[in-house]
Length: 541
Image 1 (cartoon, rainbow, N blue to C red):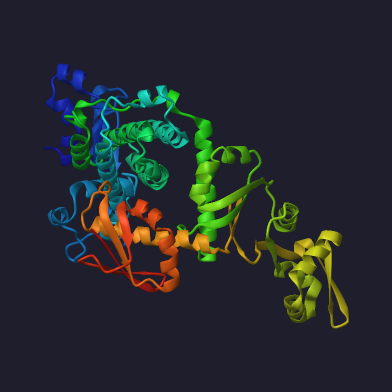
Image 2 (image 1 turned 120 degrees about the vertical axis):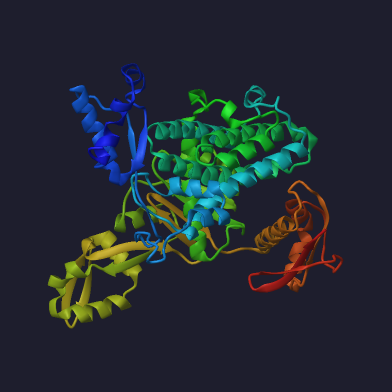
Protein backbone atom coordinates (compact mmCIF):
# COMPACT_ATOMS: atom_id res chain seq x y z
CA UNK A 1 0.00 0.00 0.00
CA UNK A 2 1.57 3.26 -1.13
CA UNK A 3 -0.69 5.38 1.07
CA UNK A 4 -4.03 4.84 2.82
CA UNK A 5 -5.79 7.58 0.93
CA UNK A 6 -4.10 6.65 -2.33
CA UNK A 7 -5.31 3.09 -1.91
CA UNK A 8 -8.92 4.05 -1.09
CA UNK A 9 -8.98 6.74 -3.77
CA UNK A 10 -8.02 4.31 -6.50
CA UNK A 11 -10.48 1.64 -5.33
CA UNK A 12 -13.10 2.07 -8.09
CA UNK A 13 -10.48 1.93 -10.83
CA UNK A 14 -8.34 -0.83 -9.32
CA UNK A 15 -11.01 -3.21 -8.01
CA UNK A 16 -13.42 -3.29 -10.96
CA UNK A 17 -13.03 -4.79 -14.41
CA UNK A 18 -13.40 -2.46 -17.38
CA UNK A 19 -16.91 -3.72 -17.96
CA UNK A 20 -17.88 -3.30 -14.29
CA UNK A 21 -16.27 0.13 -14.15
CA UNK A 22 -18.17 1.34 -17.21
CA UNK A 23 -21.44 0.01 -15.79
CA UNK A 24 -21.12 1.16 -12.16
CA UNK A 25 -19.05 4.36 -12.32
CA UNK A 26 -19.85 7.15 -11.74
CA UNK A 27 -21.64 5.99 -8.59
CA UNK A 28 -24.91 7.90 -8.05
CA UNK A 29 -24.30 8.83 -4.40
CA UNK A 30 -21.57 8.85 -1.74
CA UNK A 31 -21.73 10.24 1.79
CA UNK A 32 -19.08 10.81 4.45
CA UNK A 33 -18.04 13.18 7.22
CA UNK A 34 -17.14 16.77 6.43
CA UNK A 35 -13.43 16.05 7.06
CA UNK A 36 -13.41 13.78 3.99
CA UNK A 37 -13.52 16.79 1.64
CA UNK A 38 -9.71 16.58 1.79
CA UNK A 39 -9.60 12.83 2.37
CA UNK A 40 -11.52 10.13 0.57
CA UNK A 41 -13.72 12.45 -1.55
CA UNK A 42 -10.64 14.29 -2.82
CA UNK A 43 -8.50 11.23 -3.60
CA UNK A 44 -11.40 9.48 -5.33
CA UNK A 45 -11.85 12.49 -7.57
CA UNK A 46 -8.22 13.33 -8.36
CA UNK A 47 -7.10 9.74 -8.94
CA UNK A 48 -10.05 9.00 -11.20
CA UNK A 49 -9.13 12.07 -13.28
CA UNK A 50 -5.47 10.95 -13.47
CA UNK A 51 -6.22 7.32 -14.29
CA UNK A 52 -8.77 8.27 -16.96
CA UNK A 53 -6.65 11.12 -18.27
CA UNK A 54 -9.89 13.10 -18.43
CA UNK A 55 -12.13 15.25 -16.21
CA UNK A 56 -14.30 12.32 -15.12
CA UNK A 57 -15.67 12.11 -11.56
CA UNK A 58 -16.21 8.66 -9.97
CA UNK A 59 -19.41 9.91 -8.31
CA UNK A 60 -22.42 11.97 -9.37
CA UNK A 61 -23.04 13.41 -5.91
CA UNK A 62 -21.28 13.43 -2.54
CA UNK A 63 -23.17 14.39 0.62
CA UNK A 64 -20.89 15.68 3.38
CA UNK A 65 -22.08 15.47 6.99
CA UNK A 66 -21.15 17.80 9.83
CA UNK A 67 -19.95 16.51 13.19
CA UNK A 68 -22.21 16.03 16.21
CA UNK A 69 -21.28 18.29 19.14
CA UNK A 70 -22.60 18.54 22.69
CA UNK A 71 -25.51 20.87 23.49
CA UNK A 72 -23.14 23.78 24.18
CA UNK A 73 -21.40 23.37 20.82
CA UNK A 74 -18.31 21.67 22.25
CA UNK A 75 -16.55 18.66 20.77
CA UNK A 76 -17.64 15.40 22.39
CA UNK A 77 -14.81 13.76 24.31
CA UNK A 78 -14.68 10.89 26.78
CA UNK A 79 -12.09 12.76 28.83
CA UNK A 80 -14.48 15.68 29.39
CA UNK A 81 -17.43 13.36 29.97
CA UNK A 82 -19.78 14.90 27.41
CA UNK A 83 -20.09 11.89 25.11
CA UNK A 84 -23.60 10.52 24.56
CA UNK A 85 -23.47 6.76 24.07
CA UNK A 86 -25.65 5.66 21.17
CA UNK A 87 -26.87 2.46 22.83
CA UNK A 88 -27.95 4.31 25.99
CA UNK A 89 -29.69 6.95 23.89
CA UNK A 90 -31.63 4.29 21.97
CA UNK A 91 -32.69 2.62 25.21
CA UNK A 92 -34.20 5.85 26.48
CA UNK A 93 -35.66 7.45 23.32
CA UNK A 94 -37.48 6.05 20.26
CA UNK A 95 -35.19 5.50 17.29
CA UNK A 96 -37.54 7.38 14.95
CA UNK A 97 -37.50 10.40 17.24
CA UNK A 98 -33.69 10.46 17.26
CA UNK A 99 -33.57 10.01 13.50
CA UNK A 100 -36.12 12.77 12.89
CA UNK A 101 -34.31 15.11 15.27
CA UNK A 102 -30.96 14.67 13.53
CA UNK A 103 -32.50 15.50 10.15
CA UNK A 104 -34.84 18.24 11.43
CA UNK A 105 -32.18 20.06 13.43
CA UNK A 106 -29.82 21.28 10.70
CA UNK A 107 -28.46 20.84 7.20
CA UNK A 108 -26.41 17.65 6.96
CA UNK A 109 -23.24 19.59 6.17
CA UNK A 110 -23.55 21.74 9.31
CA UNK A 111 -22.30 20.80 12.76
CA UNK A 112 -25.10 19.71 15.07
CA UNK A 113 -25.31 20.59 18.77
CA UNK A 114 -27.18 17.63 20.24
CA UNK A 115 -29.62 18.31 23.08
CA UNK A 116 -32.01 15.77 24.60
CA UNK A 117 -34.17 18.66 25.84
CA UNK A 118 -34.54 19.90 22.27
CA UNK A 119 -35.09 16.32 21.10
CA UNK A 120 -38.10 16.09 23.41
CA UNK A 121 -39.53 19.48 22.40
CA UNK A 122 -40.65 20.22 18.84
CA UNK A 123 -39.47 16.96 17.18
CA UNK A 124 -41.33 14.92 19.80
CA UNK A 125 -44.39 17.15 19.37
CA UNK A 126 -44.41 16.49 15.61
CA UNK A 127 -44.29 12.70 15.89
CA UNK A 128 -46.63 12.55 18.89
CA UNK A 129 -49.14 14.81 17.11
CA UNK A 130 -49.00 12.66 13.97
CA UNK A 131 -49.67 9.56 16.09
CA UNK A 132 -52.63 11.20 17.86
CA UNK A 133 -54.07 12.46 14.57
CA UNK A 134 -54.17 8.88 13.30
CA UNK A 135 -55.84 7.79 16.53
CA UNK A 136 -58.36 10.63 16.21
CA UNK A 137 -59.17 9.61 12.63
CA UNK A 138 -59.45 5.90 13.42
CA UNK A 139 -61.74 6.29 16.44
CA UNK A 140 -64.06 8.84 14.85
CA UNK A 141 -64.24 7.22 11.40
CA UNK A 142 -65.03 3.80 12.88
CA UNK A 143 -67.76 5.40 14.99
CA UNK A 144 -69.40 6.70 11.77
CA UNK A 145 -68.74 3.45 9.82
CA UNK A 146 -66.55 5.23 7.28
CA UNK A 147 -65.35 2.98 4.45
CA UNK A 148 -62.70 3.35 1.76
CA UNK A 149 -65.28 3.89 -1.02
CA UNK A 150 -65.79 7.42 0.31
CA UNK A 151 -62.86 9.07 -1.44
CA UNK A 152 -61.91 12.66 -2.21
CA UNK A 153 -63.39 12.16 -5.70
CA UNK A 154 -66.68 11.02 -4.16
CA UNK A 155 -66.74 14.07 -1.88
CA UNK A 156 -66.02 16.43 -4.80
CA UNK A 157 -68.69 14.85 -7.01
CA UNK A 158 -71.26 15.28 -4.24
CA UNK A 159 -70.12 18.85 -3.49
CA UNK A 160 -69.32 17.95 0.11
CA UNK A 161 -65.95 19.67 0.41
CA UNK A 162 -65.87 22.98 2.27
CA UNK A 163 -63.20 25.67 2.09
CA UNK A 164 -61.10 24.20 4.97
CA UNK A 165 -60.96 20.85 3.13
CA UNK A 166 -59.96 22.49 -0.15
CA UNK A 167 -57.32 24.59 1.64
CA UNK A 168 -55.79 21.59 3.44
CA UNK A 169 -55.63 19.52 0.24
CA UNK A 170 -54.13 22.44 -1.67
CA UNK A 171 -51.45 22.85 1.00
CA UNK A 172 -50.83 19.10 0.82
CA UNK A 173 -50.00 19.33 -2.88
CA UNK A 174 -47.50 22.10 -2.17
CA UNK A 175 -46.00 19.90 0.56
CA UNK A 176 -45.63 16.93 -1.80
CA UNK A 177 -43.87 19.11 -4.36
CA UNK A 178 -41.58 20.73 -1.81
CA UNK A 179 -40.51 17.51 -0.10
CA UNK A 180 -39.87 15.77 -3.40
CA UNK A 181 -37.63 18.64 -4.51
CA UNK A 182 -35.80 18.88 -1.18
CA UNK A 183 -35.13 15.14 -1.05
CA UNK A 184 -33.74 15.18 -4.58
CA UNK A 185 -31.30 17.95 -3.64
CA UNK A 186 -30.36 16.36 -0.26
CA UNK A 187 -31.88 19.25 1.70
CA UNK A 188 -33.52 16.84 4.11
CA UNK A 189 -33.71 19.32 6.99
CA UNK A 190 -35.94 21.58 4.89
CA UNK A 191 -38.18 18.61 4.10
CA UNK A 192 -38.43 17.84 7.84
CA UNK A 193 -39.29 21.46 8.67
CA UNK A 194 -41.97 21.47 5.95
CA UNK A 195 -43.55 18.35 7.49
CA UNK A 196 -43.35 19.97 10.92
CA UNK A 197 -45.16 23.08 9.67
CA UNK A 198 -47.92 21.15 7.89
CA UNK A 199 -48.61 18.65 10.68
CA UNK A 200 -48.64 21.17 13.54
CA UNK A 201 -49.62 24.53 12.07
CA UNK A 202 -52.04 23.46 9.33
CA UNK A 203 -53.52 20.09 10.21
CA UNK A 204 -53.48 19.97 14.01
CA UNK A 205 -53.94 23.62 15.00
CA UNK A 206 -56.31 24.78 12.24
CA UNK A 207 -58.11 22.01 10.34
CA UNK A 208 -58.89 19.69 13.25
CA UNK A 209 -60.39 22.39 15.53
CA UNK A 210 -62.39 23.83 12.61
CA UNK A 211 -63.98 20.48 11.68
CA UNK A 212 -64.23 18.87 15.14
CA UNK A 213 -67.70 20.29 15.80
CA UNK A 214 -69.01 18.81 12.53
CA UNK A 215 -67.63 15.36 13.39
CA UNK A 216 -69.34 15.43 16.76
CA UNK A 217 -72.75 16.19 15.23
CA UNK A 218 -75.06 13.22 15.74
CA UNK A 219 -77.52 14.41 13.07
CA UNK A 220 -77.91 11.59 10.52
CA UNK A 221 -78.73 14.09 7.76
CA UNK A 222 -75.19 15.47 8.09
CA UNK A 223 -73.44 12.11 7.95
CA UNK A 224 -72.20 12.53 4.37
CA UNK A 225 -70.47 15.74 5.39
CA UNK A 226 -68.74 13.84 8.20
CA UNK A 227 -67.70 11.13 5.74
CA UNK A 228 -66.25 13.82 3.46
CA UNK A 229 -64.08 15.08 6.34
CA UNK A 230 -62.89 11.52 6.94
CA UNK A 231 -62.02 11.18 3.25
CA UNK A 232 -59.86 14.30 3.52
CA UNK A 233 -58.18 13.10 6.71
CA UNK A 234 -57.51 9.69 5.18
CA UNK A 235 -55.93 11.22 2.07
CA UNK A 236 -53.82 13.61 4.13
CA UNK A 237 -52.65 11.11 6.75
CA UNK A 238 -51.80 8.40 4.21
CA UNK A 239 -49.77 10.91 2.23
CA UNK A 240 -48.00 12.17 5.36
CA UNK A 241 -47.07 8.60 6.30
CA UNK A 242 -45.36 8.12 2.95
CA UNK A 243 -43.66 11.53 2.99
CA UNK A 244 -42.27 11.09 6.50
CA UNK A 245 -41.34 7.42 6.02
CA UNK A 246 -37.69 8.10 5.01
CA UNK A 247 -37.30 10.05 8.26
CA UNK A 248 -39.45 7.92 10.61
CA UNK A 249 -39.74 4.47 9.00
CA UNK A 250 -40.97 2.48 12.02
CA UNK A 251 -43.63 4.91 13.25
CA UNK A 252 -45.01 5.65 9.79
CA UNK A 253 -45.12 1.97 8.83
CA UNK A 254 -46.93 1.08 12.06
CA UNK A 255 -49.52 3.84 11.58
CA UNK A 256 -50.00 3.01 7.90
CA UNK A 257 -50.68 -0.68 8.51
CA UNK A 258 -52.69 -0.22 11.71
CA UNK A 259 -55.01 2.61 10.70
CA UNK A 260 -55.66 2.09 7.00
CA UNK A 261 -57.55 -0.99 5.95
CA UNK A 262 -55.91 -3.28 3.39
CA UNK A 263 -52.51 -1.56 3.45
CA UNK A 264 -49.58 -3.98 3.58
CA UNK A 265 -46.60 -1.66 3.58
CA UNK A 266 -45.60 1.86 2.63
CA UNK A 267 -42.73 0.31 0.68
CA UNK A 268 -45.27 -1.32 -1.66
CA UNK A 269 -46.99 2.01 -2.33
CA UNK A 270 -45.99 4.78 -4.74
CA UNK A 271 -44.50 8.13 -3.86
CA UNK A 272 -47.28 10.79 -3.88
CA UNK A 273 -47.58 12.76 -7.10
CA UNK A 274 -48.18 16.51 -7.19
CA UNK A 275 -51.74 17.20 -8.45
CA UNK A 276 -51.98 20.74 -9.74
CA UNK A 277 -55.77 20.47 -10.10
CA UNK A 278 -56.04 20.40 -6.28
CA UNK A 279 -54.06 23.61 -5.82
CA UNK A 280 -56.45 26.52 -5.25
CA UNK A 281 -54.34 29.65 -4.79
CA UNK A 282 -57.24 31.97 -3.88
CA UNK A 283 -58.34 29.83 -0.94
CA UNK A 284 -54.75 29.37 0.21
CA UNK A 285 -54.19 33.12 0.17
CA UNK A 286 -57.42 33.74 2.09
CA UNK A 287 -56.44 31.19 4.73
CA UNK A 288 -52.92 32.60 5.01
CA UNK A 289 -54.39 36.05 5.65
CA UNK A 290 -56.77 34.57 8.22
CA UNK A 291 -53.90 32.78 9.99
CA UNK A 292 -51.95 36.03 10.23
CA UNK A 293 -54.96 37.96 11.52
CA UNK A 294 -55.77 35.29 14.12
CA UNK A 295 -52.13 35.29 15.24
CA UNK A 296 -52.17 39.08 15.69
CA UNK A 297 -55.50 38.79 17.51
CA UNK A 298 -53.95 36.24 19.88
CA UNK A 299 -51.15 38.71 20.61
CA UNK A 300 -53.79 41.36 21.40
CA UNK A 301 -55.51 38.90 23.76
CA UNK A 302 -52.21 38.30 25.55
CA UNK A 303 -51.76 42.06 26.02
CA UNK A 304 -55.30 42.31 27.36
CA UNK A 305 -54.86 39.15 29.51
CA UNK A 306 -57.79 37.50 27.76
CA UNK A 307 -57.72 33.74 27.17
CA UNK A 308 -58.29 32.51 23.62
CA UNK A 309 -61.21 30.40 24.85
CA UNK A 310 -63.05 33.45 26.15
CA UNK A 311 -65.64 34.84 23.71
CA UNK A 312 -65.34 38.58 23.08
CA UNK A 313 -67.75 41.09 21.65
CA UNK A 314 -65.84 42.59 18.74
CA UNK A 315 -62.67 42.59 16.65
CA UNK A 316 -61.63 45.50 14.42
CA UNK A 317 -59.21 44.33 11.74
CA UNK A 318 -56.90 46.36 9.50
CA UNK A 319 -55.46 44.60 6.43
CA UNK A 320 -53.55 45.53 3.30
CA UNK A 321 -55.21 46.87 0.17
CA UNK A 322 -56.95 44.06 -1.74
CA UNK A 323 -57.21 41.67 1.24
CA UNK A 324 -60.61 42.60 2.68
CA UNK A 325 -62.67 40.55 0.22
CA UNK A 326 -60.41 37.53 0.59
CA UNK A 327 -60.75 37.60 4.37
CA UNK A 328 -64.51 38.19 4.23
CA UNK A 329 -64.87 35.05 2.08
CA UNK A 330 -64.02 33.12 5.27
CA UNK A 331 -66.25 35.18 7.56
CA UNK A 332 -67.87 32.18 9.27
CA UNK A 333 -64.51 30.62 10.03
CA UNK A 334 -63.02 33.95 11.06
CA UNK A 335 -65.76 34.46 13.68
CA UNK A 336 -64.98 31.07 15.25
CA UNK A 337 -61.20 31.44 14.98
CA UNK A 338 -61.23 34.89 16.58
CA UNK A 339 -63.90 33.74 19.06
CA UNK A 340 -65.83 37.02 18.79
CA UNK A 341 -69.47 37.99 18.29
CA UNK A 342 -68.72 40.23 15.33
CA UNK A 343 -65.87 41.78 13.38
CA UNK A 344 -65.26 44.54 10.89
CA UNK A 345 -62.46 44.82 8.33
CA UNK A 346 -60.86 47.92 6.85
CA UNK A 347 -58.08 48.23 4.31
CA UNK A 348 -55.20 50.59 5.02
CA UNK A 349 -52.20 51.66 2.99
CA UNK A 350 -48.75 51.19 4.50
CA UNK A 351 -47.87 54.15 6.73
CA UNK A 352 -46.39 55.02 10.10
CA UNK A 353 -46.21 57.69 12.77
CA UNK A 354 -48.56 60.67 12.56
CA UNK A 355 -49.87 59.69 9.14
CA UNK A 356 -50.90 56.25 10.40
CA UNK A 357 -52.68 57.58 13.50
CA UNK A 358 -54.63 60.11 11.45
CA UNK A 359 -55.71 57.42 8.98
CA UNK A 360 -56.83 55.09 11.77
CA UNK A 361 -58.80 57.87 13.42
CA UNK A 362 -60.41 58.72 10.13
CA UNK A 363 -61.64 55.11 10.11
CA UNK A 364 -63.00 55.64 13.66
CA UNK A 365 -60.69 53.06 15.21
CA UNK A 366 -60.01 53.25 18.98
CA UNK A 367 -56.42 54.55 18.85
CA UNK A 368 -54.59 56.37 21.62
CA UNK A 369 -51.40 58.21 20.60
CA UNK A 370 -48.04 57.49 22.21
CA UNK A 371 -45.57 60.32 21.69
CA UNK A 372 -41.85 60.37 22.55
CA UNK A 373 -39.12 62.90 21.85
CA UNK A 374 -36.55 62.08 19.15
CA UNK A 375 -33.60 62.92 21.42
CA UNK A 376 -30.90 62.95 18.74
CA UNK A 377 -32.80 65.42 16.57
CA UNK A 378 -33.91 67.87 19.26
CA UNK A 379 -30.48 68.30 20.89
CA UNK A 380 -29.39 71.23 18.68
CA UNK A 381 -32.78 72.92 19.20
CA UNK A 382 -33.03 72.43 22.95
CA UNK A 383 -29.34 72.93 23.79
CA UNK A 384 -28.98 73.85 27.49
CA UNK A 385 -32.78 73.64 27.94
CA UNK A 386 -32.94 69.87 27.26
CA UNK A 387 -33.73 68.93 30.87
CA UNK A 388 -36.47 71.52 31.19
CA UNK A 389 -37.90 70.54 27.79
CA UNK A 390 -38.15 66.89 28.80
CA UNK A 391 -39.97 67.80 32.04
CA UNK A 392 -42.43 70.04 30.17
CA UNK A 393 -42.97 67.39 27.50
CA UNK A 394 -43.82 64.76 30.12
CA UNK A 395 -46.60 67.01 31.44
CA UNK A 396 -48.02 67.69 27.97
CA UNK A 397 -51.09 65.78 26.74
CA UNK A 398 -50.12 63.66 23.68
CA UNK A 399 -53.49 64.54 22.13
CA UNK A 400 -52.53 68.22 22.23
CA UNK A 401 -49.27 67.48 20.40
CA UNK A 402 -51.01 65.34 17.75
CA UNK A 403 -53.63 68.04 17.13
CA UNK A 404 -50.97 70.72 16.67
CA UNK A 405 -48.88 68.53 14.38
CA UNK A 406 -51.96 67.76 12.30
CA UNK A 407 -52.76 71.45 11.84
CA UNK A 408 -49.33 73.14 11.64
CA UNK A 409 -46.80 70.29 11.41
CA UNK A 410 -45.15 71.67 14.56
CA UNK A 411 -45.56 72.10 18.31
CA UNK A 412 -44.22 74.94 20.50
CA UNK A 413 -42.86 74.40 24.00
CA UNK A 414 -42.36 77.45 26.21
CA UNK A 415 -39.21 76.80 28.25
CA UNK A 416 -37.94 79.50 30.64
CA UNK A 417 -39.37 82.29 28.46
CA UNK A 418 -37.88 80.64 25.35
CA UNK A 419 -39.91 79.15 22.50
CA UNK A 420 -38.68 75.75 21.29
CA UNK A 421 -40.44 74.78 18.10
CA UNK A 422 -40.43 71.05 17.29
CA UNK A 423 -41.61 69.58 14.00
CA UNK A 424 -43.21 66.22 13.27
CA UNK A 425 -39.85 64.54 12.65
CA UNK A 426 -38.71 65.62 16.13
CA UNK A 427 -41.19 63.16 17.67
CA UNK A 428 -41.43 59.38 17.70
CA UNK A 429 -45.13 58.71 17.24
CA UNK A 430 -46.85 55.39 17.83
CA UNK A 431 -50.23 54.30 19.17
CA UNK A 432 -52.00 51.85 21.42
CA UNK A 433 -55.64 50.97 22.01
CA UNK A 434 -58.05 53.13 23.96
CA UNK A 435 -59.65 51.96 27.19
CA UNK A 436 -61.83 48.83 26.84
CA UNK A 437 -59.75 47.65 23.87
CA UNK A 438 -56.48 45.76 23.40
CA UNK A 439 -54.40 46.02 20.26
CA UNK A 440 -51.56 44.24 18.48
CA UNK A 441 -49.91 44.80 15.12
CA UNK A 442 -47.53 42.88 12.89
CA UNK A 443 -46.34 43.70 9.40
CA UNK A 444 -49.30 45.57 7.94
CA UNK A 445 -51.96 43.87 10.10
CA UNK A 446 -53.56 45.63 13.08
CA UNK A 447 -56.23 44.04 15.28
CA UNK A 448 -58.23 45.75 18.03
CA UNK A 449 -60.32 43.57 20.34
CA UNK A 450 -62.89 44.71 22.88
CA UNK A 451 -61.92 43.75 26.42
CA UNK A 452 -65.29 44.24 28.12
CA UNK A 453 -67.27 41.03 28.62
CA UNK A 454 -70.91 40.65 29.59
CA UNK A 455 -72.38 37.84 31.68
CA UNK A 456 -73.21 35.71 28.64
CA UNK A 457 -69.65 35.87 27.32
CA UNK A 458 -68.20 35.10 30.73
CA UNK A 459 -70.47 32.04 30.99
CA UNK A 460 -69.40 30.72 27.59
CA UNK A 461 -65.75 31.30 28.44
CA UNK A 462 -66.15 29.43 31.72
CA UNK A 463 -67.78 26.52 29.87
CA UNK A 464 -64.76 26.23 27.58
CA UNK A 465 -62.33 26.46 30.52
CA UNK A 466 -64.09 23.62 32.34
CA UNK A 467 -64.55 21.61 29.13
CA UNK A 468 -60.81 21.69 28.47
CA UNK A 469 -60.08 20.30 31.93
CA UNK A 470 -62.70 17.55 31.65
CA UNK A 471 -61.41 16.56 28.20
CA UNK A 472 -57.91 16.26 29.68
CA UNK A 473 -59.33 14.09 32.48
CA UNK A 474 -61.12 11.86 29.92
CA UNK A 475 -57.80 11.31 28.18
CA UNK A 476 -55.97 10.61 31.45
CA UNK A 477 -58.55 7.95 32.34
CA UNK A 478 -58.25 6.23 28.96
CA UNK A 479 -61.62 7.03 27.42
CA UNK A 480 -61.84 7.24 23.63
CA UNK A 481 -62.87 10.60 22.13
CA UNK A 482 -65.94 8.92 20.61
CA UNK A 483 -67.16 7.44 23.93
CA UNK A 484 -70.29 9.17 25.22
CA UNK A 485 -70.02 8.86 29.00
CA UNK A 486 -72.81 8.89 31.55
CA UNK A 487 -71.89 11.89 33.65
CA UNK A 488 -69.40 14.65 34.34
CA UNK A 489 -69.39 16.04 37.87
CA UNK A 490 -68.11 19.48 38.90
CA UNK A 491 -67.75 20.49 42.55
CA UNK A 492 -66.70 23.56 44.58
CA UNK A 493 -67.57 26.27 42.06
CA UNK A 494 -68.37 29.64 43.62
CA UNK A 495 -72.02 30.69 43.56
CA UNK A 496 -71.72 33.04 40.57
CA UNK A 497 -69.78 30.51 38.45
CA UNK A 498 -72.20 27.74 39.41
CA UNK A 499 -75.21 29.73 38.20
CA UNK A 500 -73.48 30.52 34.90
CA UNK A 501 -72.50 26.88 34.29
CA UNK A 502 -75.94 25.53 35.15
CA UNK A 503 -77.44 27.67 32.39
CA UNK A 504 -74.90 26.26 29.92
CA UNK A 505 -74.90 22.63 31.10
CA UNK A 506 -76.22 21.30 27.77
CA UNK A 507 -73.41 23.02 25.87
CA UNK A 508 -70.85 21.66 28.32
CA UNK A 509 -72.26 18.13 28.00
CA UNK A 510 -71.88 18.36 24.20
CA UNK A 511 -68.29 19.61 24.41
CA UNK A 512 -67.15 16.82 26.77
CA UNK A 513 -69.40 14.08 25.29
CA UNK A 514 -71.41 13.09 28.36
CA UNK A 515 -75.13 12.50 28.82
CA UNK A 516 -75.49 14.87 31.76
CA UNK A 517 -73.64 17.32 33.99
CA UNK A 518 -74.18 17.33 37.74
CA UNK A 519 -72.89 19.47 40.55
CA UNK A 520 -73.20 16.97 43.40
CA UNK A 521 -70.72 14.42 44.72
CA UNK A 522 -71.97 11.34 42.87
CA UNK A 523 -68.72 10.03 41.31
CA UNK A 524 -66.21 7.74 43.01
CA UNK A 525 -62.99 9.54 42.21
CA UNK A 526 -62.37 13.26 41.75
CA UNK A 527 -59.42 15.23 40.45
CA UNK A 528 -58.33 18.52 42.02
CA UNK A 529 -58.02 21.35 39.48
CA UNK A 530 -58.32 25.11 39.35
CA UNK A 531 -59.72 27.84 37.11
CA UNK A 532 -58.13 31.25 37.54
CA UNK A 533 -57.05 30.42 41.12
CA UNK A 534 -60.51 29.03 42.00
CA UNK A 535 -60.07 25.45 43.28
CA UNK A 536 -62.52 22.90 41.87
CA UNK A 537 -62.95 19.12 41.71
CA UNK A 538 -64.00 17.27 38.56
CA UNK A 539 -64.81 13.71 37.54
CA UNK A 540 -66.19 11.70 34.60
CA UNK A 541 -67.77 8.25 34.56
